[in-house]
Amino acid sequence: MSWGWLRSIASGIKVSVTVFGVATGGLLLLAAHANSAETSVRVKADEARIVPLVASPSTVIVGNPSIADVSVQNGTLLVVMGRNYGSTNVIALNQAGEEIANFELSVTTSGVHEVSLFRGSARASYNCAPTCESELNVGDGEVTFNRILTQQTGKMGVVTGAVTNGQASE
Image 1 (cartoon, rainbow, N blue to C red):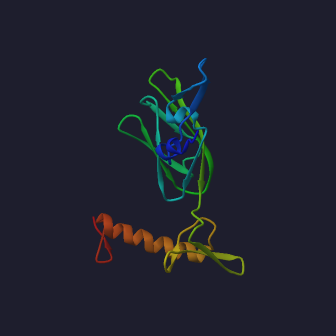
Image 2: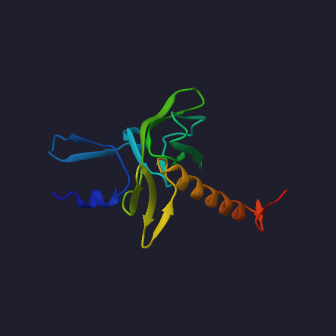
Image 3: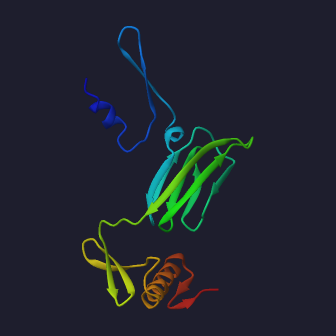
């Protein structure tokens, strides 16, 4: 029997499937909630991932908030934002303080278009898709990191209206 149809339906969605034998030799499939089977979640740095929950959390705990940020959307969806590569855990509790989710979270770099340039011991990171542009990564040399951080902070200031014509707005 081909199970390709099930794989195509569940593509990109982790589900727990329990298979029970039936006296007639048939199979009964029961799909559990997506997060109950999810003990490990991976997300790339500077990207987001949706993790569905079985119930609305009243408290969400991130083991190391410098690695990831989590917010709740539409009551039962966790939006996990990878901040910096590393590993941590996420726990969600309902109003009664009962655990409704507990999973390991791994934040990775994309690696696909990433190039590292070393000048002595100082590293500079680039994203080369399709042309190489400087990228801010923890572990880059201090001079390169600070230069890119200053530029990105200035750009975000312009985008958010905090900076106009090179001057901070009050």
